[in-house]
Each structure stands twice: as C-alpha cells, then as structure tokens.
Image (cartoon, rainbow, N blue to C red; front, side, top):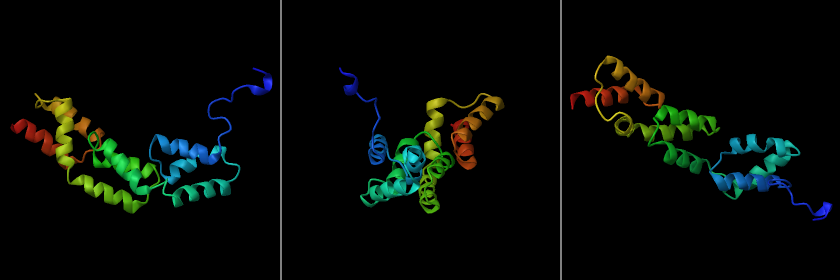
Length: 157
C-alpha cells in the first residue's frame, strides 16, 4: 500500500456518537458511565451533552434497561447490598436503585441459599467453618438476616 492508504487503527477516527454506540452495543450503559468513558474524546462538554441527549431521546440510553441488565446478570450470585453498590456506581437515580433493591430483598434468602449450596453444599463442621461461610455470603452482599437463616437452616437439616 502507498503511505497515504494505510489502514486506520481500530477505533481511530470514530465520531463521538460512534464511540457511544459501540459502547452501547456491548452492554447497557447509564448516561453517567458514557459521560465518563467519552469525556476524553469529546471536543467540548457541550458536544458530549448533545450526543448523549440525542441518544437518550432515541431511547438508546435507558436507566430502566441498565437496572434490569444489572439485576439479570448479578442477582443469582450477589446480594442486594452488592447490587445496590454497583447500581449507585453507575450514577443511576436513587429512586430507581431503591426500587430495584426492594424487589431483590424478597428473594434474598433463596438466592443466598443457592449461592451457599453451590459453594459449600454441607453444614459447617465447627464455629470456624460457620464463620467462613458467613463471611463469604457477607462479601457477596447478602444481608445479615439472610445469612443467619441460610447458615442456621443448613445446620438444622
């Protein structure tokens, strides 16, 4: 190839809107996440705001879909506290986060039991093992009440 016909590097020359669409094609992103990712590529904050407003008007950016996506990906492995933290980190509205967490609370014990069963499968032999199981579930974001119910129920079986 001649020097002026060299292929562009991947991602080189993409418009701001193109970069945003590429991110959105991979997974759902909140407006705040896209702002963080695209800020370095924007010529001005106004240009970035305009692109994001346009995408939001066309429903490419949806807070409800971001919440649904996170819950679908994480609920089987993590507790409500961990998911709440992730949703807050995405810059979502407090109301949407609170609503999502309250819906997760209803199934917290069942989800914790399933995570416990996959990891341990049998009741703890002693207090040290019980503490290890409880710390594991707490690190996954499950609440104290759910942890106590799962671990104590496993010992009662």
